[in-house]
Image (tube, helix red, strand yellow):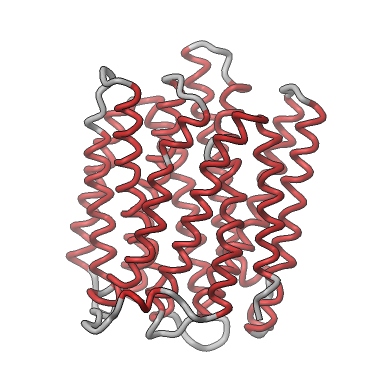
Length: 406
């Protein structure tokens, strides 16, 4: 339990900074006049790095131990924050974009090292009886996303109140103190690694893990296709009156919505075992629910896309409908995501957990990359209806993978 608490605390600290940094970068560069496609590309290396990192992180953790990859992830995030504080407004736009993309890539490496370490630790530390594994992974994942939601709000608030540079330096300092505390107080209980771990072991031969990873790609692509660029830019454009004060107010409103969405998402994730009555179901029963829940989720963006396309102009009632609809999407998405997070740990074994979790989160990062690119491109081409319509299509593809699980 002490090791689980320490791992969770480290993960919370990281995700708070990750959420705040996402909003800082997105809203700061949007205020500088970056187009939706350029905004999307700021995060491309972040997602590409996640694909590469998760493949290697599983092997690194198996070879050198879970605490090593957790500490390295936190350290790289601190370095990424310090690097972003060096951004100079006098630099040429092309150079600024490339610089931020590379630093965001480093942040992506950091995030996936921390995530893989934390999720793998749950498999090794959770009680084996009953729905203990589902409850522990749901609690870690749900609380992490609630903290990340607070990070979105924190990032928007710090940008509006203190400015970009003060916010970045403040986060770097706090995260450095937390890393020192975690290293000092981390109890025993996590494996130290094994010298014979081979990189080739990362690629799973388990049919269920491969199909679950396929479904995960398109599930997270469907979220990020509207979440990364589409909704923040759309809401900022309809909420701001064009003045400096109006832009500041819009920052707070956009950040508040993103925070509320992720906090709700995290809360439902933590409650997923109860919502699905996991204590009374077998692992096979829970596996069979995966396709049903993703199909229910697909109805939400399809309905919203059609509504926005038919109205074709901003209106207060439409904004309200979007907020309510996307909160419903968040609740359904949370159940899907929590179910996936349980299934990957249920399908794997203790000796392969870091490898299989790394492979699975490689697919997760590939989905975020797909969604990030499509978010900028679809918004540029067809606005918010295109983002939401694309999300519905991606969810239908995800359901095909979920339907192959046994």
